[in-house]
Length: 298
Image: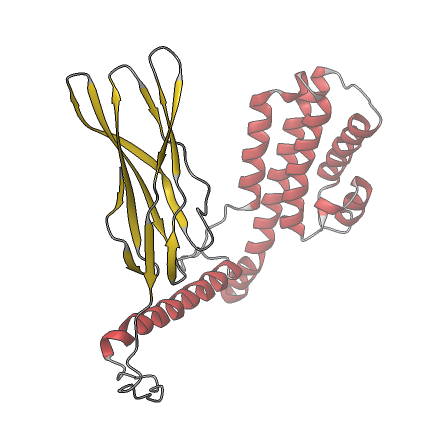
């Protein structure tokens, strides 16, 4: 037994074909999926579904459903649908269901009263302040972000923090002495002399560069000593620095292994150089003041 919910439809509508059958308890019923499309212009939507309607006195009533649709108008005489009943003894019976007829139609237009109209232009509504507010807010946000970025870049160039506060840098001799103290506490010469002298001379180079305005980080030891020879410096301080730099070059480039005592004494030598040249800087700075005081007392 088969029937459709609706047999006359508009194109694009869907209808469900229903097929009822009865089997004995213990038997199996198989309703395979039909080919898709069932026929030209008629398509199946989804897989067949079979539900049990009742189960009384050993008789099971089943209903199988198939949803179909069409997008072409016309009358469709559906082919038969085949199902299978598998009995308890293993034999199989073939069941056939009549597909029936479906009619798909289009909406009929009354041409006698039909009057064509021109396509209307787009309707524009006035622009409201409420619609403009998000864009105004976005524009203000972009302007504020641009201003903050520009100000931050300027502060960085002026050696200030992002918020405009001056960045206070420690004096060059404080930075150097702090690094030398750190190197001494680590006792790096006991582990790796090359790394030890590299860090030690880098600390001195950084100090010399800021103290005398020499590009010490990019120069060789001989170039540094040549530039320092032009500066006002005690010969003893200059000689001790020269010996320290030469020893450092031997360890770093000539694979020389310095005695532990010589390594350990390199830190105090570096500290003496920093302290001596820093004191010279203070004396040079205070000398004009002292001269002015003496001149005023005459």
